[in-house]
Image 1 (cartoon, helix red, strand yellow):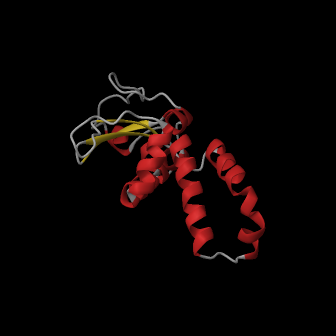
Image 2 (cartoon, helix red, strand yellow):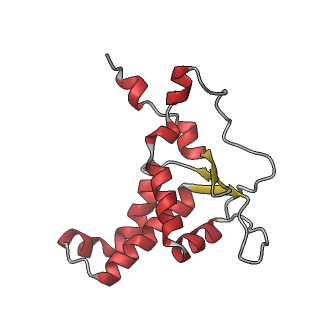
Image 3 (tube, rainbow, N blue to C red):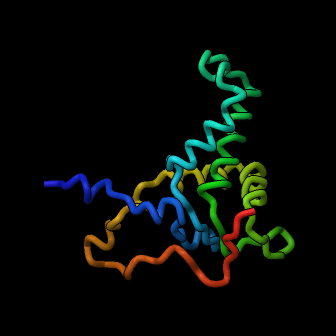
Length: 153
C-alpha cells in the first residue's frame, strides 16, 4: 500500500531555500520550487496588468511573450537561487544575481525550460527522497554550499 505522505510530502525549507542540482553539463544549480505561495503571488502581481486579456482568452503573440517573461521573472525571484561553475563564452565566471538569472533565461530558452522543469519536479523537494527511502543515499544537504553566491539582488 502507498502512503500519500510518503509519496507527496515535501520539505518547505527545500522548496523556498532550494536544493542543489549537481552536474548539469558541469553546472550546479540551486533550485527552489515553483508553485509556492510566494512564486504564485509574484506571478499574480506581474500578470495583473494583463488580467482582462488573459481572462478573455485573447492571447496574441505579444501577450504570450509577456507571459513567458513574467514566468522567467518569477523563476529568477523564487526558483533559480544560485549557481556554481557558470562562466561566459570567454571562460570568465558569471556572478549570480536575480537580474543575471532572468537575463540568462531570456537569452537561452532551453536554460529557462530546464530551470522550469527542475523547479516543478516534486522529487527534488520531497521530505524523503526515493533514494533515502531505499537507504541508498547520504544524508540530505542543508541546501547550502561553500563558495557560491546565493545573494539576491
